[in-house]
Amino acid sequence: MKFTDSMKTLYEILRHVSVEPIMFIISMTTFMRQPTNQLLVLHKVCLLNYNATTCNHNMTVDVENDIQADTAYWNFYLKMALLIPGAVVSSLYGPLSDKLGRRVFLIIPSVGNIFGAVALIIQSEITLMPLEYLLATELIVGLSGNVVTTYVVAKSYLCDITDRTNRTKRLGVIKSMSYFGGPVGAFLSGILIDREGFASVYYIIAGIHVFIVIYVAVWLQESQGEDHHEKGGDLELEDGVGEHSEQEDHHKDGAEKEGDETTDDASTRKENKTDEDNAMCRLCGGTRQGLTEVFKGIENMLFVCFRERVGFRRKHLVIVQLIGIIHNIGSTAESDLTVLYTKHSPLNWSATTIGFFFTLRTVLKALTLSLGLPLFFKLTKHHSLRMDLSLASFGIISTTSALVMISFAETTTVMMIAPFVGMFVGFPSLILNAIKSKLVEPYEYGALFAFTALIQTLTSTAGSAMFSSIYAASLATWPGLAFMVTALIYVVSLGLISYLWFDMKKAAEDDQRYQSDDGSGYEKVDTTDEESD
Image (cartoon, rainbow, N blue to C red; front, side, top):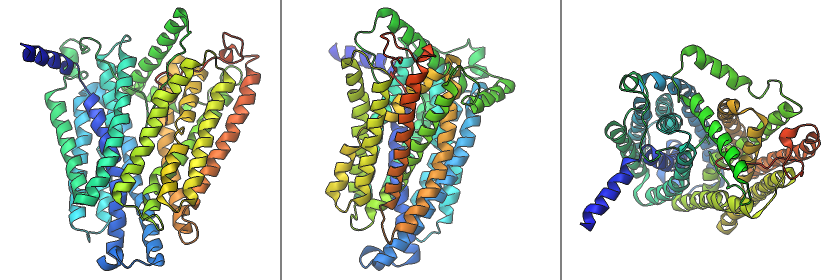
C-alpha cells in the first residue's frame, strides 16, 4: 500500500513537470560542449601542423605559442559560425512558434545539435580531418537555433501554461536548473576527455538531445499554435505549473525582499514583478501576434534605451547598458581564453583540472547570488543608492582582482584561489539589471531585456575578435596580457558606476522614481528573480 501511495505521489509530481528537465540538461550540455570544442581544436591544430610525437612529448615554446595562436583564431571563427546564425534564427523562431506551436521549435535545435555531435565524433576519431568541416558543422548547429532558441521557446512554453499566480515561481525554478546543470556538465566533460577521449563527451551530448526530442514528442502537450487554439485555448497545468526565469545568455540571479517590508509594499512589488514577467512572455511569443505586431515589437526593442524620458532616466539607462556591455566583453574574454591559457605552459592543465576549475567558479558564483546576496538584503533593513551601487562596485573589484591574479598566475594554487577572490562577479549585473527595470515603464521590460540580449550577442562576437588577437599577439611575451586588459576594462566600468552614484543621488532630489520611503534618497532595488548577464 505504501508503495502504491509513493507511486501516486511520484506521478503527481511528474505530472506537473514540463520544460524544467530540458533546461537542466541543456545547461549541462552547454558547459560540456564549449571547453571540449576548444580542447579538440587545440589538439587538431597541433596534429594538422606537426606530428603526434611533437604534440605529446617534444613541444618547444615556439611551437606551443604557434599552436595556441592558431587555435585562438579558429575558436573565434567557430564562435562566429555558431552564434550569429543562432541569434538571427532564434529571433524568428519565437514569433513563428506562436503560429506553428512550441514543440517543433524545441525539437529543431536538438536535431541540429545531434547532427553537430555526430560530426564532432567523426572529427574526434579522424584527427587529420580539416578544421574547415568544423565551421560547416557549427554553422548548421547555429541555423538550427542552438540553445538560444531552446531557452526562448522553453520560456515561452512556460508563459503559456502559467498565470500571474505562479509564473515568477516557475521562472525561478528554471533559473536554478543552470546552477546545477552547468557545474555537473563542466566537471563531467573534463573527466571524460582524460579517461575516454573527446568522442565520449559528444556521445553523451548526442544522447541527451535524442532524449530531448523524445521527451518533447511524447511528454509535452502543445501550448500554442492553430491546433491548440482550436482545442480550447491556453493549456494550464494544475497546481501552478509555472516557469522560470528571465534572460540571458548569458542569465540570472535573485535576491529576497527585505524582512520588514509591509504587506502593501510586498503586494505592489509582486504585481510589478508579475508585470515584468508578463511583458517578457509577450515579447518571447506568449501571445499570438501578427507580423505587424512582431515588427513593431522589434522597433520598440531597438529604441527602448534612446527614447525620451523624464529627468535623467535616459542618460542613466544608457550608462547602465554601457556598463553591461563592458561586463559582457569581459566575461567573453574569460570564457574564450581560460581553456587555452590553462593549457599553456607553465600551467599545462589536464582536461579534468580545467573542468574542476569551471565547476568551482560556477558553484561559487551561484552560492553568492542565490544565498549570499538574499541573506544580505534580508539582514539589511534599509538600503539605498549608496548601498546598491557599492555592492556593484564591490563585485567589480572582486572580479578585477581575480583577473589580475590570473594574468600573473604561474601555479595551479594561484589559479584555484582566483575563483574565491572573484566569487562576487555576479553582483554588478544583477543589481544593474534591477536598476534598469526602475528606469523604464513596466510595459517596456520585455523590449529592454530583449535589447540587452541582442547587445550581448553583438558585443560577445566583437570581444572574441579583440581578445583572441591580443592573446595570439602576446603569447611570446605575456600570455596573461589579455586578462590584464580585461581587468582594466572593468576598471572603466567602476568609474561609470561612481559617476552613477553621484548623478543618481543628485537626480533623486527632482525625480521621485529614485526616492525611497525612508528618505534615504533612492528607492530600494528589488533584485528578486532579476537576471544577471
